[in-house]
Image (cartoon, rainbow, N blue to C red; front, side, top):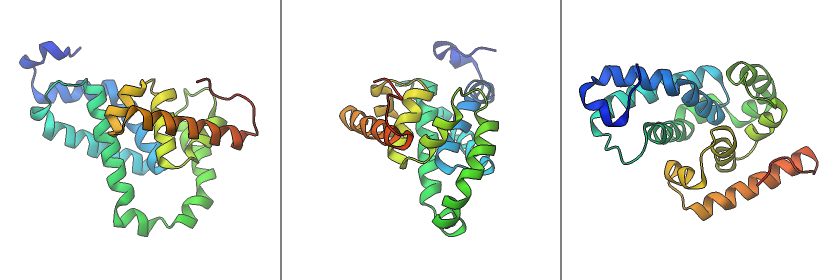
Length: 182
């Protein structure tokens, strides 16, 4: 089944949701993983994203694509989770930092097995969230500066600055050289 934005009026919310889960489920999981760096949490967040999506389908105004809408829901869900009391209390920063290398090696390989450069992706996961999200959206999800701006609700120039800082941070981590083309 293929859902066209113009022909959706005849489809049920359930049919649209099934299509969205099949089409964008992996993308939602990848984005969630970049925020929480743990497979089970990313899977839980992905489920929450699609539950929210289902409940909000009737409010979707088609001013953006479903993909952009799902990115926005995913980013908001991840940011809410990371700011939550349980995440801060159950995952003290010291534990996250000491366990992150093990998790990145095992989980990112599984979740992102199609990525060509896991070593670079591990470095990306170590960036601060604001830099990490623009790198993920720009290079891994192929969004334009304007699309990223719409998803994370920041001005395009802010996105460009974050992208520039993230590239420089990655270059420093890797030890110089050109790693990502602008």
